[in-house]
Length: 371
Image (cartoon, rainbow, N blue to C red; front, side, top):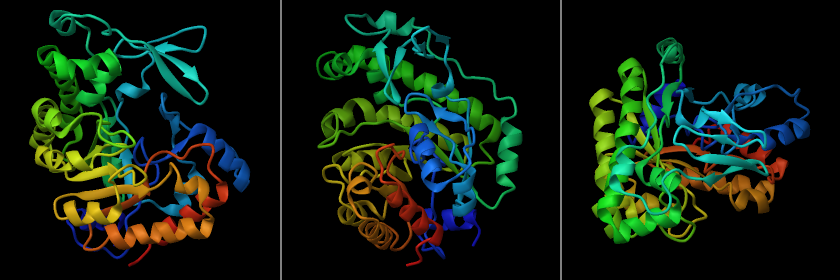
């Protein structure tokens, strides 16, 4: 099978000739710059400059030495997403983003130190806020056509923020979460504004290349380590309809499958998330509460596919290479039964990883782990 055939077969819930893999296809399953530089040194690779795909997380392109070895099944058409724009840079290394937030470098990453819509605000202030406008799409068609001519499935990855995460981003977690429970009108005014901005990003991209892509990725982190950020009742009443609006729009412009990226525990929300129209749950953080592979596959495997699952939070940092290899093969056995699985890290590789474990993971990935 070609990479595209392998991926599409799995996403149709059929077993392909080997497990399809992703490494660095999304901004959420690759490597941080610090990890890339340390792994280069460990492997003796000649350092090569790579593009930063997400400034806040420090995620960079996968080194060519790894992509040549893995021959991944997915190729990405990178949009000019909201994450790669620094509107104004300051002397201390901080910058302002397209939302008007100020982000400051902290260790390997960035933290938000000023938000434009925090503290007491009115609905009119939200409506009048200068929300991001879609970028130009110069060269996008040519890049997508080249990707389509390959043997790989084509991913258009997360051009814009999700409504829940966007509310936390521009208003702050405390203010926005309180709004959801105490001022639904204000919360929905903000959710509506972010959703319309996100749809506008999807519109310009899918108008140009919707017929060329196989997978569309949208992020909206709604999970914590031990539970979702919000109750299923709040999700159903206040968030679900905005997710559905985005996914309905995407499906009106393309036949591509849709993944939603969610870190953390989202088991309790999955019945509602599935009803919004997603085809794939991406990340699958098995170290979070209620995210056991057996339960996810048993309870939701007929309705959605899974992308990720290789624990980059705990297991990769503590297991021996042999134990880590065994766990990856176990994941393929569970999630890959009857298709519906793309093997990938559950998030970007961090600089505290034992490099022999990353090497072991890449060895397993390269084998396609035939069941």
